[in-house]
Length: 326
Image (tube, rainbow, N blue to C red):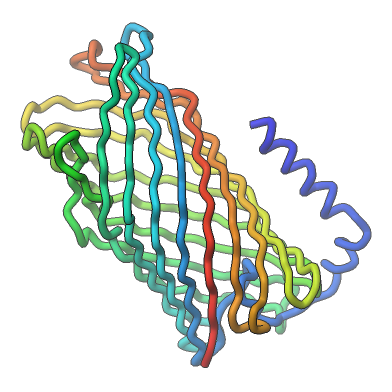
């Protein structure tokens, strides 16, 4: 968390400089590809093709406080995003991904390693973006967003002998807003998202049990920016915090239920962008680090099964090609 505080302080110092203040007093309504406030104009098509490598780790302890294992997870993901401008202020959104591999290695405190692999399609996501305020006739830009993801693919947990899937096993919806200001050199935007995670069902391939997780809402607040160094290079930087609610899980076969508590996390991210073709083809290299709070699995009727997770963090490195045309 010290890193997060340092970056927040650095951002405050940056936006207090005279150059930043002067830039933010001016307004620019140009739709810049890779900018946090970008939205395609009427008849414009936008696409983003990306690859992300991620690595995370965490420690698990049992109900007595004894350390049971340390788990490392690495994944390789391809993602495709499309936007199409129905009007200058209304766009259709589509996103779909494929996990080439998600490999989990569980290093047991008693000795030995258990490996579980997953792969497959993520559930697709459809949505709308509506520009309620535009800097062409307002000092600020305000976008309202709504997305929906169906339960398109079955969810199966990975075992030592059987690969798992990466789909949620349930529906999902997101409602959000982005408000910001674009100057000639700087863009700053604040974001809010409310995410509904519908009831999901995951198959345990060893026991054949179906584990059900009840629906819940999570919320995220974020701050993102872009600094345009010249006509070719720009830097995006942002920070966000996700507030997670307690989740209730139920084993349909055994009747055993447990509560998952905690798990809020803070993300810090940055990207370097290069305009191969001005405002038409843009390449980006990105990095993100997630700081996770401790979480617990609480079994009200069988406390001997309680576990808690600590020391969880995650690194994500990505490369994205963005393109826009009529």
